Image 1 (cartoon, rainbow over the protein chains, first blue to last red):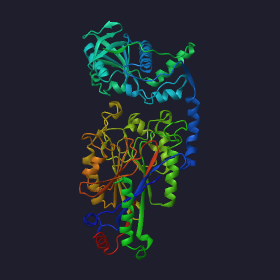
Image 2: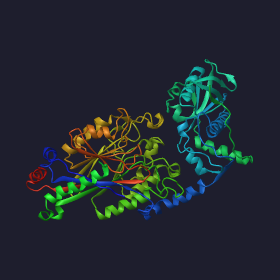
Image 3: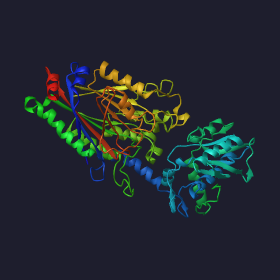
Image 4: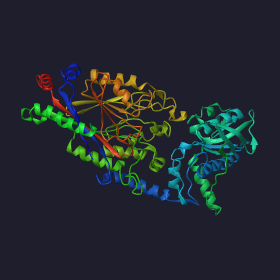
Length: 254
Length: 303
């Protein structure tokens, strides 16, 4: 599937810039874009030989089943089973990390940027490979200390996007802003400090979350988000449970 | 008028003009040289073809097929150069598990002559580029990032000249603004310089000072944007000495390379090859040896 195009270069240009200085003159250009379809060519055997040992290592681990999912989870707005499942998981695992690290505070809110959730979770067996598809980035867990006003600004950004993946907090969206915010079942207090568990990408201001860079304090324990998800799913299986999630009205429209 | 027909007709017409008006029997074949430029972008560590279960791309693409295609082109024409416009990293577990090592090894075996740096090359930080770099047997050319205050100082040439059958092909590279795409930790002390200013400097240097016959830009800026964000189309319109821009980042599928006019009103080609090795761009530049009063001959042809 190759198309051809051609043009002729203007000679004035050649005379002005190159012709008298060089041995060659460009007279023509042809080309096209080759669509690399299934049938056009077979993979290069030397390349395959190089990656085959890597592939074997990978397949062994990628096909490992972590847990069983009761029902397909897809991401959606303002909330969805998948966005709620991930945020709740982050909050729960975040508390464990803080405890293990000897910290004297708890995480109040958890947050994933919607765009960072890259696929859905199918019904049935969830493999390591599926979690790599879900979270391909090497993002790390970060805790951010923000005051109530800053939390409000953060949730306004979430509201302006029509809702994202949040845990530990409930609010309604009215005219693109977050209203009636409750954190841990209590009304938000403007001067109080709260801890948000999230990833380093947004913690550094990604996805319009400049407010996160104004944090009062932070803690970065050096754990990959993907590893946290994998160990959470493993612990569900070890308890003999399967994965479920619900929408619960944590983000609603007024 | 149908664009495709227009291009096809132009192709035949132009071939008639150049070859027909200059009868080939007057010139020995070695008076002609064809430089074949092959290119990819945004491979995203898709080393294998896409899975046969993938509804959109089943069995297509992947570096292993690009390698086979490139090798077959090179067999037909040794004056073939293979380039990549960045984002080799991130996208399959091959990257998560083996970092940059495997993709660099495979691109080296595929015969890449050069690549440039995409934003995802920063995904594991500056050390994530440094560590696997010895596996890349081809240079990563970048002209507008300044790494001098980082561990990557001196690791990437700003330009490189390839010589094929006596023809000099100068290549420079442009990277995208990192601040909105890459975490600040991963950027470190890398400095991003204005791509257009860099392009103007590099093309003048390569064509006028180094006397290159062909100047190619490897860009990870993206094809075009709404608004005035810098892109390949902006570089094409604002430069005067660059002949070809090989682009990436926007994962654009183009049925044909784009022909447009540069600042001097002269033709420039801009191309991009989708992503994941699903397309390989191919541009042939045909050169004719400049004997005696060749420019007069050409001037006559055009009149």
